[in-house]
Length: 358
Image (tube, rainbow, N blue to C red; front, side, top):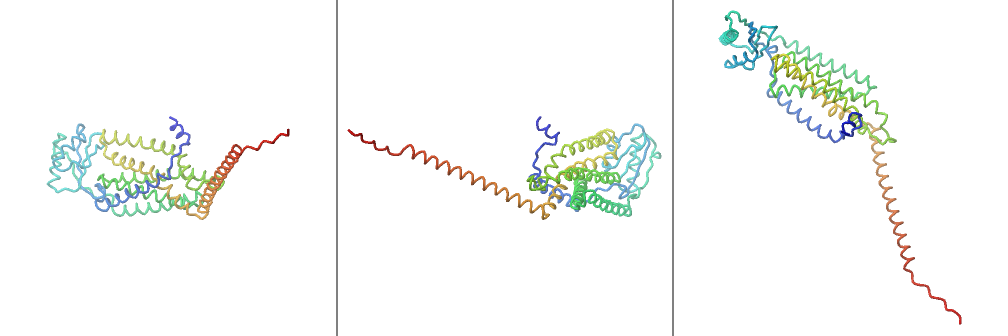
């Protein structure tokens, strides 16, 4: 209970300096796995990227689960199935032969209990083409440059903090894409939108940490015996509860969207959006504390003034230790001398008695 109260007040004392040593190794391992999966397996791009076939049939009773089970024997159990409007079932899958398209059309007609002519089929081209991809990448680069400039100006020319934000964002994007590659989640335009939302959230959480750092940066100095690393550790402890609260309040609605919207109601589009948000929010919280903060600390601790401060504090600490050792040695010597004097005073030979005159 006391630890919870201390956490609420920002008085907890978690040693993030030790945790950073492990977080760097964990992040490096996850990044390597993500890049390897992206290089070897790639991404499971949806129909909007690669094109395919689309079937639609009106039925008020046909559900997503029943449609998926009915199309399973045709190899379409992983097809994208949506309820459009109130009574229209839409099935999208990669391009199939004309014979397969006719079989799927007949199967949907049987499932819905309608004539085969009431099932519409069309070939869908890739709506998200190469030009849109290039434009999106160009916009992302401009966005990152703008963020670098904004963070640098906001935090008084501290370009090192801007670099920390950039490293954190790249870290979040690669790991999020790696999760989609490893688990073969389908990438759709909704996923891309979710990734852009992730970037904004990750930057926000990192800026919250940096704002507290700017408040505490005046504590760094010889008088307070606090290095930049000590100050960063203090700042993270002070904003930890705020980060936890922000993360929980952000993740709960997304999980509700994922569980209720996707798994219960069968809205596949919500599933694509919610999975990307859930993964991105979790990674963003982690990166603000265990990626952005150590990156800035690594840069700042190599500034000449902070190097000199560490050396002075180390020298003072060694001097205090030597002084304490000298005082202890002097006290020991004094005690030994007192003991010797006492021994001499209690064990001296008796004085000869004076002879009395008769």
